[in-house]
Image 1 (cartoon, rainbow, N blue to C red):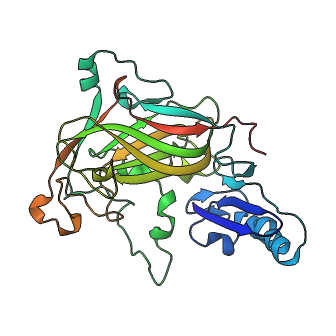
Image 2: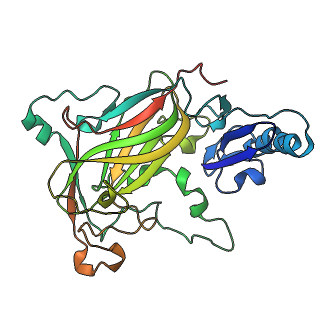
Image 3: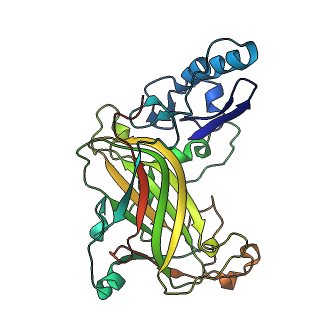
Length: 332
């Protein structure tokens, strides 16, 4: 998704508002905007933006005609595929809830219930992260980033099916059961991990994913599709300060916060909510040696080491993704 934002000041009034649409860079300025990659939007979102938002905006400010067409936040809500407007962002009606990691790859709004300290130490999922065999950020074969003869996968990689990493031993996955009702998320998405590593530095990549039903008769290629809704990487050395990186103490449970920014999405009835965690995302991001060095760009071959990463999911260490859940009647 690409954010389109404007801040304007005049003697009439100060305005600061946000418009977010389902496009890659510049997608609002040309073409119908009916889809991105394999994901359909069931309307001409680019035409809507140009005619209903952009043109009235310039008419108001340049020609003193009409009224401003938007509230503080106007966003195209994916999942429901509708334009929504809010008086504030995040919406005032949105409630903070946590999607907790559970045993057996389950994800739930209910917190984990393990009590004993011994359970807390054992209630974790682990994987071996090897910088020599990193998790790719899009499916192979990875084509040219900017091919001359046709658009490459780079332009739509954010909406590519994430099933290409399913089954990898260095990717952890948790997911809900089939949703009995729509779940609308509008606002910030923040992963709160309790993690340990056998190394002294680590990257944490977190993805929030919408898992489509196994049969989508409207478009069969979307059957079982795993669509990233929010995603981000955090380098563990900066957990306390970006100015003063610090080594991670090996084998110690440490809290990490990964800001996945904002989203406005409906996980529809019959879908599932999934969270994935991994420690490499190559070549989108450079490989972490997983051994603390003063400057990663000067790391030597011997500095790149395998490390066992553990994500905890106990009552004492409740790893989760915090989301803002919106009642269905809040958007207008």
